[in-house]
Image 1 (cartoon, one colour):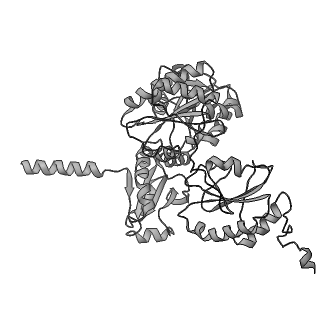
Image 2 (cartoon, rainbow, N blue to C red; image 1 turned 180 degrees about the horizontal axis):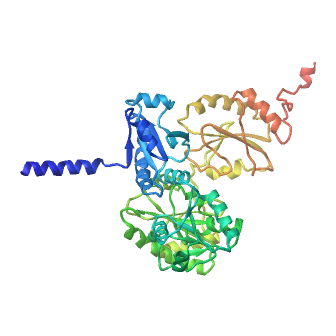
Image 3 (spheres, rainbow, N blue to C red; image 1 turned 90 degrees about the vertical axis):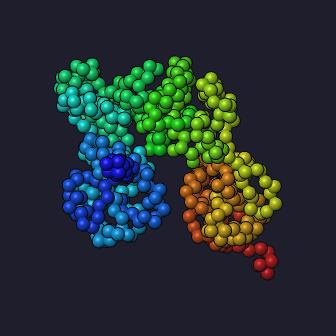
Amino acid sequence: MHSILFLSCFVVLITFATSSDVHVWTDSDFESKVKEHDILLAEFYAPWCGHCKRLAPEYEKAATALAKNDPPVALVKVDCTVETKTCTKYGVSGYPTLKIFKNGAVAEEYNGPREADGIVATMRSKAGPSYRVLNTLGDYEKFLEHNDHSIIGYFDSETQTLKDDLVKVSNQLSEKFRFAYTTAKDILEKAGHSNKIVVHQPKRLHSKFEDAFSVVEGVGDKIKTFIQDKIYGLVGHRISSNAADFTKPTVVVYYNVDYTRDTKGTNYVRNRILKVAKKLADENVNVRFAISNLDEFRQELTQFGVSEAKKDAKYVLARGAKDEKYRMSEDFSYEALEEFARKLVKGDIEPYLKSAAVPEQTEDVKVVVAKNFEEIVNDNSKDVLIEFYAPWCGHCKSLAPKYDELAKTLSKESDIVIAKMDATENDVPSLYNVRGFPTIFFAPKNDKNNPRKYEGAREVDDFIKYIAKEATDALHGYERDGSKKKTAGDEL
């Protein structure tokens, strides 16, 4: 009896430990099951694939969230090392490959985010219309119970134009936000709204320091602007998929934000931040606040010099109006947070720069770091060709001797600077969109706000031809086509 009980408990534990909202399909059942879903996302993977392993926990979290979506969206995975027939049929040639199926057929390749929130937002926007029509109180209450914000239009028969405006905005923003409208009298009476569009905070974010909803002001395009500006409230929950939505200046507090397992603990801290935010908002201090999960944004923390974040600590970082980086150096307290935000707005703190030490310039190629970028690259008296590189980059290593030769060849051109910057050790200004290595830009004198990306070949002669053509002032030793100028000796 005891052994049977033990075995039963063991089976239950195993089942619980391995339960998943991701459907695992095979060659034997893929074609029949795919037809049972109006829409689904399928991942074709290989167990040994590193990208697949990194995607797995995010895919799992997204599957759990989308299983509760209205309508539900299934997430499926297929092991292509075993289910070769299915993977061959759908032309899988690399891993992971993700495809969106609608009504049993491939609708499109999935090219969206690979983190949970982004997957959820993308698939939610593709499941059904961009808005819901709420006909009953049950529909209304269920819509409001969601963990995300709810944007609802409350209309009577005389508000067709306002309804059309809401539908238009929902078509533009449904990938990020949830929209609905109602004309049901019992819903209008219960909500206390009529002829209005209202942004509702989810219950997990309700607080005594701000209203649980805000009525949209304006019509037409102003509706979209209002939603984008106001939806996150005084202290928004900032996640990977919405991080770019927060207008600057924004002060972000990083800690153990977890609205799944510790809503109470998360809101204990957020409510105290809200108190600070409300105080500054009442004084018309122009600054936004947000909270972010420390683990989710560890890579972002390293960009501010926090290389070993402590799990139970709180960190305060900020972006200024021009995207400058700021870091609160004081030990965390709510008084220090308030003072930091005030100084940020007043411009009384120095931006944080990740920078290597300023070097002595001993070679023809000038070495640029964050701290001397302004002095060298933004010198309005010189044109600058700058290479952004990584020490481990093979292409950068191959380029190095050619780049050195280029700098030596043009060393007597007083108006031209050939420079390089280790982009892994230094902050790169946002004007320079560095996505890979090496990336090369030309910054002309007197037009430093418009650097031009170099897209040409990487031989010395190719660089010289480009610089000779693009230089603000003609080179002393080269014609505009890159050919050497003839000297008196050449004439003889």
